[in-house]
Length: 432
Image 1 (cartoon, helix red, strand yellow):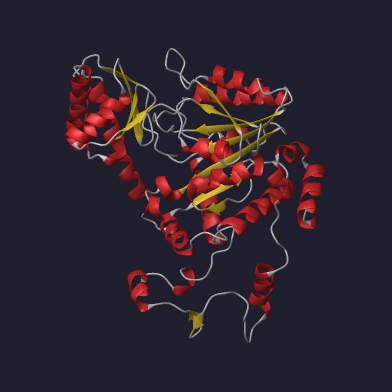
Image 2 (cartoon, helix red, strand yellow):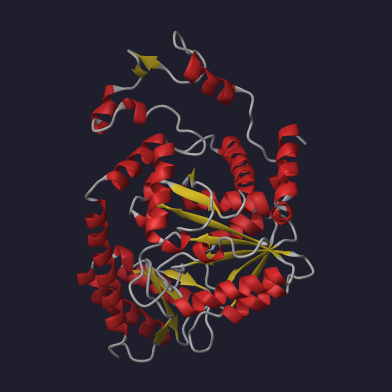
């Protein structure tokens, strides 16, 4: 093991032994190099006033070298904010701005101790960092049966963890906090569990209400009191798109500082919140009462970033920072929110109108990009194929009877036609 990794481990073990025990074998071996190209370049940037021949970029006339054909498309920005490498942790001004945004959007975080957000290559990268740091063969990763399929690849296939599912909904279509609690307490012999909380949920578009949120936190706390070290990942990909009565904050704020055996990790980003999917700008934020533990986790996270992508894209980070600092940001975001809310409400009005009879039910949805139909007595895959081949309509079949529909990408005026076609395809499949 590298001595730097050993020093980080010793520091974490002495300061926060429960968090140290949460680390995977890879997590314990990770470190951020203190000597080498990056550290020497950082030293030179402050002292090499005459010539700085350290970092691997090209300069011209005192600015980063660039092609005019590219700069002409980005003329609103200075070359220094586009072409050089961004720091592995992300553009400092962006990290600060995102932290301020998180506190503004989540008042429960205001008095909690948590690290500075670290920039990631969107949320999948953030989840992958969590998996590398904390998951390995035999560890239980707990999330509901309605989930984003990439969790299986990220935690199960890549890291060999045991996937533990519980039903998302109870019989009365409430969040199944008892199912989460049972899945957690079943890990007592292992002494460790990783929980993924994804609200608004993909694929159902569901976010629990405040009371259910308290039950989720209570279940996690009960596991910690029982002696289980719990890594809790709040996958807040669709954060802010809350259209009805539900939690309007991430559970990260309630979990931070709750118990020394609980490590909350917030994974979020601009990709879906700010409608910049292709920019690939996300963040990972750790919650712990100890600044020492937060520093160790940041150093290990930077070790992962350095050894995988080196650093995130600088232009994308600049564009997001520019948006966050714009006086027009809040108004423009509110405008898009109303459009998304209008689409969700239109879908719910259609489904509640009895227009489509009893060919399907729908899972509760109140947020996010999606909703999910539960088809009665017909194969979701057969309906998906019928829609695609006969009507040129794309949907996602999940399991035997669930059909996910992304209302986020359909104009409100066309939603009735969409669901009419889905209804027609269901009837045609049923009729053979």
